[in-house]
Image (cartoon, rainbow, N blue to C red; front, side, top):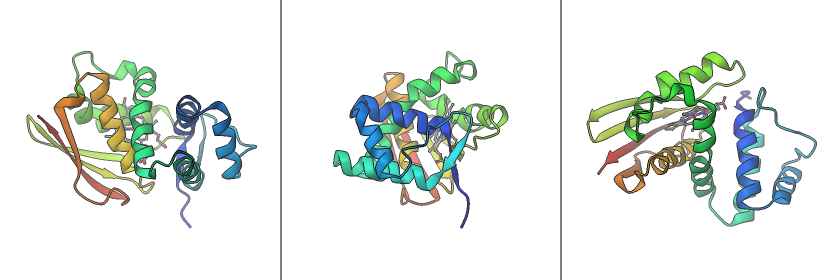
Amino acid sequence: MQNIRVHGSIFFLLKKFVTKELSAYSWDILNEQAGTSSLSFSITENYPIETMNLLLENASEMTGLSKHLLMEQFGSYLVNDLFALYKDYIRPEWRTFEIILHTESVMHGAVRKLNSTANPPILNVFQVNEKLLIIDYFSKRKMASLAIGIIRGISEYYGEADKIKITPMTNSDDERVQIRLAFL
Ligand code: HEM
């Protein structure tokens, strides 16, 4: 079996999301159900994808939201914190379009360089024209729904949510997913 892991910062932010959107004790229940009650997630470590999936599946059951929708909402939620953590890499003149265009080389690049325990997904972004980006997501963690949520969260951050349309062109459960991002 492959050892696929997720960075502790994502667990840390999931805890923040669950605690805010559900309740403080929901996080304890989810961890208990996932058999992780004795674990505290450190932002300098990484943890098995199976643990992340169990937490997300249990949270989906608890909320009645599909796992996809839950991951999308979590993705949108974590943008503020990601931006705060990596603000030095984000140019003030950038908006949704530029952020997406530069995530792979600038933000995810910085994460890989600064953080030996983190290994963000590969995002190959193609600019088709000034109103259309194609994002080629590749990750063994199969978290493309999170990517969709992050894109939406970025557009909300810049007040551009009603100006974009995000369409997964292939199955969002796959390792490789193509996402179409149109600017209206
Ligand atoms: C300020 C911008 C961003 C920062 C600082 C950032 C940082 C990170 C970090 C630290 C991780 C954890 C990696 C690991 O588990 O080893 C991560 C994962 C992830 N990032 Fe980003 N990210 C940013 C923007 C984006 C954008 C724009 C997208 C999507 C278009 C995206 C998609 C993802 C996804 C889906 C994951 C989950 C892990 C996976 O699918 O393999 N990120 N990111």
